[in-house]
Length: 292
Image (cartoon, rainbow, N blue to C red; front, side, top):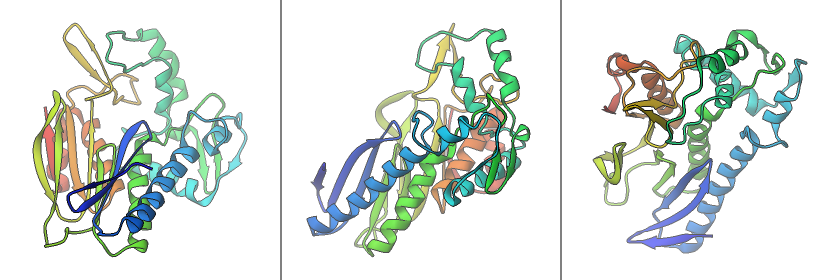
């Protein structure tokens, strides 16, 4: 267990969901910090294990292996699919958990290789929320299609960890899963948590510091997953209708909201709006930071 003392905080670090994760706990007792850190880490790993599309022993694998037959899912999975359905509706179809299958032809590894138009076009028949049948708790996924909950999984994990820690302690804590954050409330002395927003053009220092008193911050952007070819940067955020990256999107969008899922949803929706990201966020009347 990696648990370090930093000033008046205990900081636990681990890696999950392909991201660095941190749990900051304000307490004078190491045993308390160890218990809270263990609760947080176990929950994140549980969610990753249950919903990862890269495993062959979880509910996602069983759905993908259903070969077009109806399959009943558990309550937690049903709740996430319900939320994905809501995201699809609220985004006018821009957010679609069936579009993850495009990873078969897109490889956002920082290189310069683009898929051919034909390759992308061959995947499009496997995309479209309207093609699956969802009557909770029964899902029928046409053969060959997939679902990918990665677009909401990390923010969901942030909220789950926050809920568990809130039942286990009255003290201040901060959850940070790969840059998606939740603060339980002000630190001792009525001080906010100081959070840095990374500059997607340089990881050497944050471009801005934000005082987070309570609630969540989530960021969507192309700092780590992109293709760059002939001076054009292609974001990993794909239009499910065309199969190609969204045009005109900011480099990153960070949104503040009461929960991680709400903040993540709004940040992703803004990116999917492309050049209209700021207009969308202004209309939503949320606090945000947009970097182009």
